[in-house]
Image (cartoon, rainbow, N blue to C red):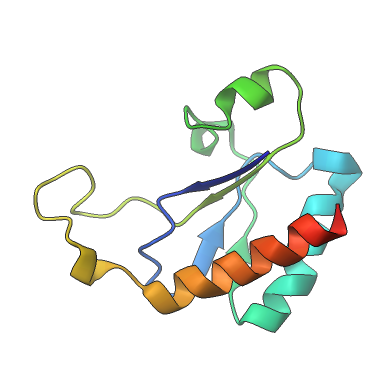
Length: 107
């Protein structure tokens, strides 16, 4: 399961993939690191349960189904009326989509 949660706001080209370090015997971080070199994205891998909270991947995690969770972090406009499409980083979203395509093709 691949979950893309709030990946539109990436001012520093960083995506966080918490909770996925042991997925497929540790393969996911290696795959992400290799392909992120081709997309110019920086990834932080955080194995912190607090950052692996409730999102669309949660039922998969709870059922021990492998997943990877991409998350670009909270921001000041999160869940407010001030969160507008002009604040999205479409270029980085495209780079992440390219990265995900490569990950899927490897599975």
